[in-house]
Length: 218
Image (cartoon, rainbow, N blue to C red):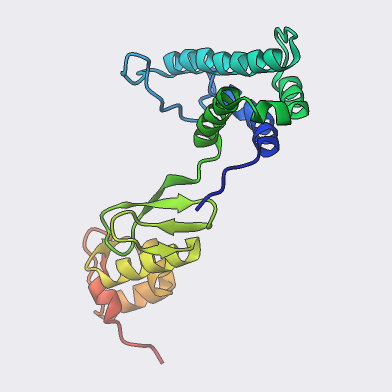
């Protein structure tokens, strides 16, 4: 179970994450996919539109942090950058902790930036090698992939090996480079088995069933 970070940690992370959050506001560099919905409940349908919405939201949240700093110091922090604002909040950490509403605002902003920049869990591009139906989720804290459907768990190496085993065990038609990688063969060995009648290519593809049944060359 994840522990709630200290205020000092949150402020340090917010300062570190701000440049990445700022990337979501750029119209020509969609560095981070911005997936939050519009205030209307409709997802932005273009990168420039998403960037404009991201800029508005990010500036609003930075404005909230400036206001909190202003409440604590009775000073207008105007256009102060994130590092200056975080520094003020860090100096008044004890006071801030005594203001539950203000602290809750910092925690809310922290949680959203973390989801965007450093999520605990995110979908990967790997299909589960166990059930073969669901995309694996990468768990940053554990450094493991997990399947939300069948609960398969493994490292990247485990996932790769399991995926290769699944492919080798299935009845598929694969191209020759893939056949070599899956079964530890060379191109010349593939050609030799074709000439020997052990493999019967179809449109340049070879059968994994026939590859599994290949006789060992002495």
